[in-house]
Length: 321
Image (cartoon, rainbow, N blue to C red; front, side, top):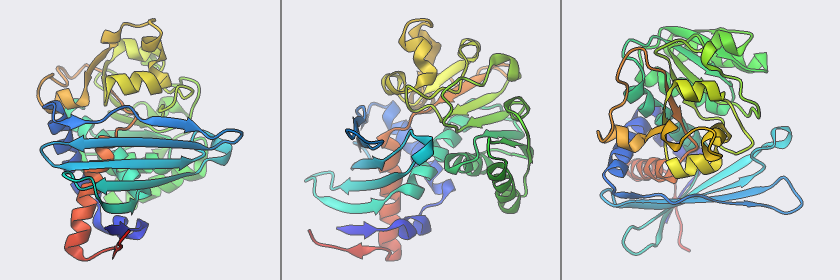
């Protein structure tokens, strides 16, 4: 069994290779060759603690694994999450790798937005807007700058220091200037927009967004979290990572869950678009949304890539249980 710590994983995974790996995984999912059941969540009694388990298997790639999350996710005043990924031998179920998965989670979350952007954004998109400049907002900027021809854009965060830090990072790494703005509306002028907040109230409305915008909405991964106003859901083509999981977990989709909007509001799953079963963007005037809550498919696919690279480069430690 191979043990990979956070430094090992960070040294063998990068955004471009993770994007390619996830695009392949979603193609496999679109062919009906992936199993990724709803995640298990448990609140730790009398505390802010939560435990989540999520598993997936890809038949053609012969990959299977489970991610464990524990911590206080969802409580801004005391938020801390620990990520651990286990990869199993596809045939006999033995553990072949255990790895720390914090950077992996950031990479795979950004990478799936990059895949969605490739299929849903206008090809002439040149500006990026990031709303929420924390760890996941940083991953969004990294991913979109990797897959799109970004020439400039905007960043907004309630904490100005975080927005400035993200703008500096993007300028230093990609030579792209992101203007630090003082409100959501200013950031929403971009061609490609990523929202990565812990907001509990919808803040992005249809009137803020111009025709042809693509939005990656990743912040609302709990029923209590909301970023997208119902007016925007009505105006846009909405693609999700998983219909069932997104409806169960995302506060953004509460209008669909309770029947205010029809289930058909959810146009497709990303795997259907990537595999060619459903067309993506049909015109330059469409507003498209990728509503993501995260799938174990992303974790085990990225984890397998890290495992193979680590073995190739001699990273990690071999243990016997």
